[in-house]
Amino acid sequence: MEKQIDYVKIERAEKIRERVLKTVTYAALSFWALVVLFPFYWMVLTSVKSYGSYNAEHIPRLFTLSPTLQNYVDAFTTVSLARYFTNTVIFTVVTTGVMLVVTVLAAYAFARLEFRGKNLLFTLFLSLMMIPNELVIITNYVTITDFDLRNSFAGLILPSVTSVFYIYLLKENFEQVPDQLYYAAKVDGTSDLKYLWKVMIPICRPTIITITILKAIECWNSYVWPRLITDDEAYFLVSNGIQEIRENGFGRENIPAMMAAVVVISVPLIVLFLIFRRMIMAGVSRGGTKG
Image (cartoon, rainbow, N blue to C red; front, top):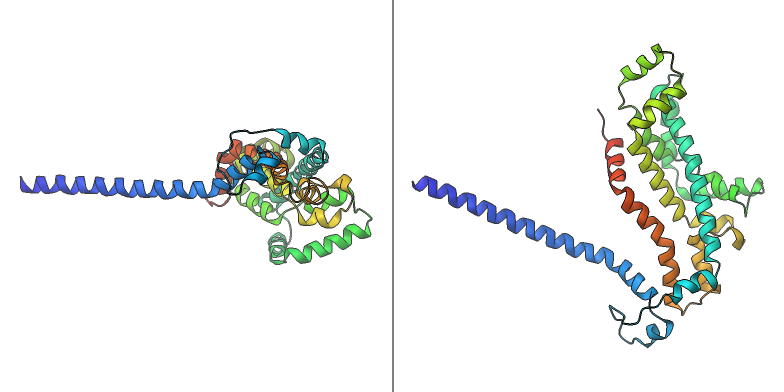
């Protein structure tokens, strides 16, 4: 009887400990979520404040009783935000599309095709990841300048159409597909391109979608290369267009209008991540798992 009572006490104490641990964990995660999300909340809040009310606040307020959308109207009428947005969409879509074709074909070649020196070539290919980005930027800048491609979409896009990391990630995913499927397809007379399109791509779709989304985010946030290769406003992207807006558009003092422009630029990426967040996590986990 005493042993049964002790067992009940131990079980009750264990449940209490688990509840306390879970409560502390969720409290810590909730606090960290507030810390992470507060800058976004402050950005949106500031964007709906008028210039006068924002400057009249001696102590920043965490809410506003008179929100306005005038800052968003000014973001598209006062400055060339629509042009920057369009340029970024073109740059992101074309770069991501070309990169996806190059990555899929290269990863398939390294994962399934047999040719002399494949392992050595792939090792040398991976060694490119050891080269600092600054050296690559300098080389790309000289090359693009020599081909007279500055201030053009071709100059913006060409240096970004391949990625060693994405090829490696997709290659690891392709190698998880059983070899028996490939041999059976070859017996049926299926070509390598048809096997890639009908079998490999559907099976590895989560990883391919992950690569696509990550590349789109990378292109959308690109700053150094577009700033270096373009000095014509007609080819500015949203990342370096923000600097132009700050200096020659709204001015350094009009923070609410600047925040409205930043919100407009940030929304597509936030929506993209929220829609495909599960596929991103699934694709990364599958790409990093062998067997």
